[in-house]
Amino acid sequence: MKKLTILNVIILLAFSLLNATIIHIPADFSTIQDGIDVSVDGDTVLIAQGIYYENLILEKEIVLASHAIYDDLDSDWLNNENITGTIISGAQEPSDPNMGSCLVIRGSGWGYTGNPEPEIIGLTFQDGDGTSLIVDNCGVILKERSGGAILMYKAYPTIMYNRFINNGHDTDNSRASGGGRKGGAMSHYSDDGIEFDEDRNSSSWNNNRNSKTIGEYIFGNPDDVAAYNNGINLQKIHESKQPKDPSSFNKQEKMLIASRDLDFVPGDGARGDLNIYMYDAYGDGWNG
Image 1: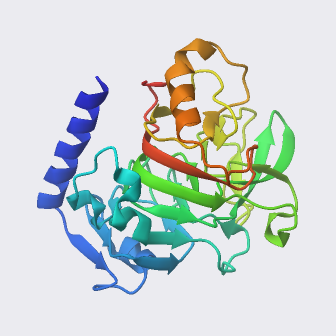
Image 2: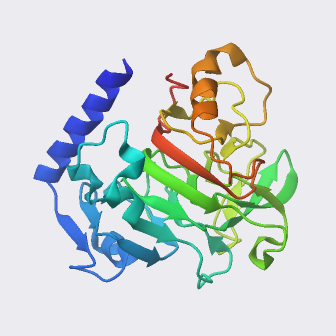
């Protein structure tokens, strides 16, 4: 089933490349964000090797990828030169200190009326610091800094063959001050009780919180996150509930132990490394 699903994604990607505009970075535009801004649904923003110091915002259904999409990505994909050499870094001081994630993917009224489903393929995300959010948790207003590398809000991307290195925030990081810290690599939010600090007046509120983060444990069977995780390095997806069926994650556990990185610092929101073979957030739970 997993092989069939991956094959379907590859076929769809090939079809999209034949029927869409390919925007080359940096040949067509010097920054990834400029390429994203001029793209429309169905386009591909294709990134050449290099380090790009950007805090990206994606509100469209496009393919955002390195030249690794043309490579034969097998079990040795972590050593692919296009993946290791195409880096989106959040190490710079962002123009908006509240927006420190390497990539924010969001929909539902921001720049996209629906719930975008972009594809993120073959990139290295590093040194992302997360994005500042205001969260209504059952009437309790909380401030969180979340999604060190990637923050998703009402968006359901497919994320394949990506490396996540040193994302999150240190205790002495001034940009991380104020509020809780979640999601060293990625965080996903799917309800209305969220505000981005860039605009406190733009979002509606309710009393239901539904968020998922990449952190220290796999908890439960998330209802809006599906993951195909051949190659996750130590961090695991979790939510706030207790595990429903821990035995179902034995295969992932063995793989995590086998691929351990001794430089990793475990913990929710702590800095650490993560290698993801395939992750998507379509709403059908885990596929192992």
